Length: 96
Image (cartoon, rainbow, N blue to C red; front, side, top):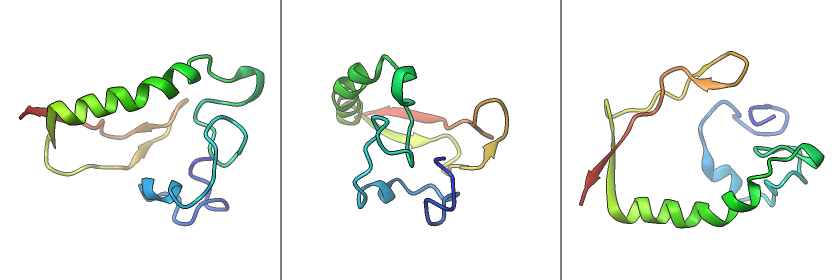
């Protein structure tokens, strides 16, 4: 669903800003984006993740500068039971 070209324009391109303009809820009410599942089988960790994400991300951004291993990111996918990146992202923290 997250890469459905019927729902998203240029669905294969990494574009996190596309979610800023739409009022899609990630909590399972809108089926265009269901990262935590929906209904009775929804991820039980969603409330904790919702509360902790901003704190953890803010702490990491505040404490470190970041660089990639080779300087570029390969966003191509590897098909399997779950969708994975062909080459894993290697983000290296650099102390300030």
